[in-house]
Length: 166
Image (cartoon, rainbow, N blue to C red):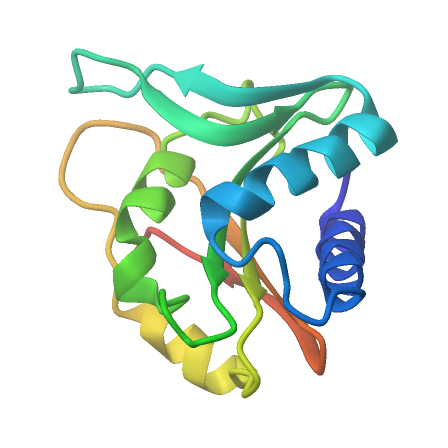
């Protein structure tokens, strides 16, 4: 699984929702099962709510999805509703970034945050990327890895790398 395939799955989810005059799913927990079905159908080995041991935490953290195989991927999902409720900006996704950056390269070759935007006006890459540059990985003795942020809107798609080394 790679960045293009994740983007394509996001686009397919948007197209499915666009077939309805009023989207039946407009929040993250309503889109989660649709995304899970697509990932499971396309890639097979998919775990939902995958537990990841994080240094300094007594309880394991949960990542939305882990796609297995020779190049495992961990994936977090964030959604902005058609009404603009819910933000895809960096500050709103700090906990997801911090979880993902702590996943080692032995557990996943790619760490991705998929942003699905159902709102009419889309973000620009510069605006969204700038909001993520302000986020830091936080203190602690743990290996930090970059996270690929993938944005999908009906009118715009892009991705960029978020680095925890700032």
